[in-house]
Image (cartoon, rainbow, N blue to C red; front, side, top):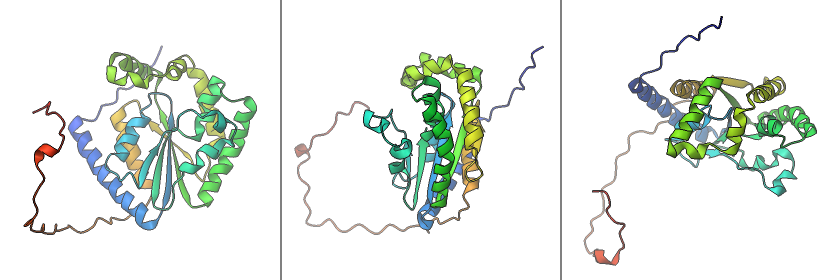
Amino acid sequence: MKKEKKKVKKIKNEVYEKELFKLQLELVKLQEWIKHKKLKVVVLFEGRDAAGKGGVIKRINQHLNPRICRVVALPAPTEREKTQWYFQRYVPHLPAAGEMVLFDRSWYNRAGVEKVMGFCTPEEHQEFLRSCPEFERMLVRSGIIVIKYWFSVSDEEQERRFQSRLEEPHKRWKLSPMDLESRSRWVEYSKAKDEMFAHTDIKQCPWWVVHSDIKKHARLNCIAHLLSLIPYEDLTPEPIELPHRTDSTGYVRPPITDQTFIPDIYP
């Protein structure tokens, strides 16, 4: 007899919004600490299609300075990039001092989609599993903080999200041919993920798994965990008093008819 899953009580919207804003304020403090201490932080977001990675990244980045915290989501490699050392196309996007980079998918494409879809050879896949831990240890030794998140979503919830993307026009762009293909390769992706974890879940930068069947819970839990991994202090500046504006005596504005305005479609 199949055991029924225990239903998890979802957080109320007003509680979620309140907690999210509190965490986002802490992210601003973390940002200022990263800038002040000249830290270099890399956060990788991996997981199945429709697992909720983008939603978490969006909430992390929402109120941060894009000059300090930036998102990297690379397209498919060009023909030239395919001939490079595998990690070469990712290295230019690594942070300098005082920066945090959020990778929306990363070099782990080789262990997932490339492996399952046959975009790399078995030899290339095996070489990745051997070299990736050394690559990441090298990053850590150079002073980069590397944090890796895997978003775990159930088969049923992923299917529900795929269906919603079909029904909602503003989400259809999220359904790529690769996403559709992944539906029929659930087991292959699971095996690839298990093999990836076996080789790359290392002490210097372990994998952190995020339960993501409930998006709002996943967002709050992931942000709270990220904040817990980097000790920081509150460097919020003192309240600023705005200076008085200078007198505009003698300044004559040009005629308003000299400027071209957009139409006021909305009142």
